[in-house]
Length: 326
Image (tube, rainbow, N blue to C red):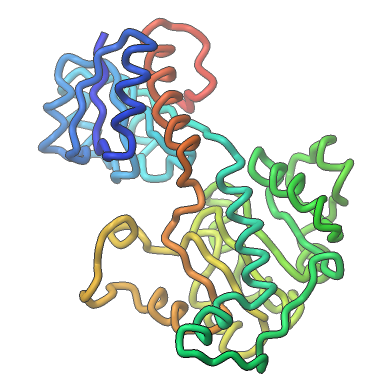
């Protein structure tokens, strides 16, 4: 069998070769993203693998016309795919998961950087300002960290944080017995009121769109820090900027942001930044912004490629497919 793999990056190539051999599958690779025009490259394949290219009705129609039945996205999130329209066409969609260590370790790093004012320390050092003014940080054993979302990544963050001696609160619709050994489940309002650091680990859904809004920022401590390595749509960026400017929030560390598509993963040096909110956030001394790189480790990329291939094979063979969404 053959799988058409779109948006192949150079860092994926060795893994594509490795797992093509391991699973005895032919991979039709292309660096081109999936579009209406490139959908024809999948002709003859029932399954394809994509990245974060938007897949709306026109693209789905083109894939359907070329005989594609199953789309595997090499990402955890799948909000870039029009799931409702795929259902109408009786097409199927799957995502993947990868090592939770990648995002969890990165989250802890951002917590440490934000609480120790690392952005200011580094910026001052670049201009040889070695004074201590404004550099005083906080120690994690004295802080309460609130984890919103206790899935695979959230649970791993909690496991990491237990070694730092901080008090940990958790909030999730589905409580985990594993988490209860290290953290205390509370409702969202209590978590926001009591936490010195709030970190987000949920998927993007209609129900949690802009869950961090002005109302919820007003519930947080004035020196609290928001960490987001989840999804940009979880945070109302306008409300976040207002809270920071008004001194109602101590800072933020953001690996994801609203409307990042078309910006992140591109070299835009010497070009105007087509996202005013991002440009503004980058200017704040108490805000760290990184370009959606929390996932980016060798193990995670390997997992993304392997699990996508396995998902396509499971669909082809009619075997159990833990990644299939519809």
